[in-house]
Amino acid sequence: GNSVTQMEGPVTLSEEAFLTINCTYTATGYPSLFWYVQYPGEGLQLLLKATKADDKGSNKGFEATYRKETTSFHLEKGSVQVSDSAVYFCALSGRNFNQAGTALIFGKGTTLSVSS
Amino acid sequence: DSGVTQTPKHLITATGQRVTLRCSPRSGDLSVYWYQQSLDQGLQFLIQYYNGEERAKGNILERFSAQQFPDLHSELNLSSLELGDSALYFCASSVEGNSNQPQHFGDGTRLSIL
Image (cartoon, each protein chain N blue to C red):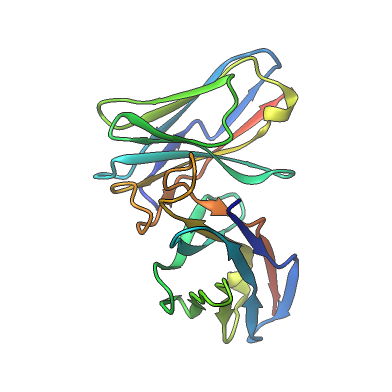
């Protein structure tokens, strides 16, 4: 079936360190890929998206490139801040998923903790 | 602020009871999705509505039902509640329910079953 696999957390970094959170997917058809972020006590916020192969999504210093050949969508940021501490979810959506319409299929989430 | 409003924020009730969760989508959005977030299952899709019609079902129990009204707000009804139904329930909306469009999430309703 269709699925998303994220690296296990928690990820603990010092301020200004480089961040990579790995995400790979299994899907039929041509899914769209998303990264969402969840701050404590809040809902999910869209961080970035990519809708076709080789697209690069970017926002607030975060980037991810849709790699169809490796079925990956890794999240990166060159210099993290304490305010980036949150849970990050990789997700996919596509029309060809049986019985699922255009619902998002999420990874389990990766907790990022950044210290000053 | 995502523009998606969910009420109530917290709900505490007992096993066997019935509750209704409410969602108002962003202005202009026609599609509403419901998700359940729990520690053991993660984020799981429950059901999608588009312009008042059910479009897709995910892992939604038969004890659960939903609808979308003409003003596009949606309600999720959970009945015969069990301890395992304790979770955070999110509503999300998008313009047309197209897979390329991002979904915008509310802050969720935290349901606790005692």
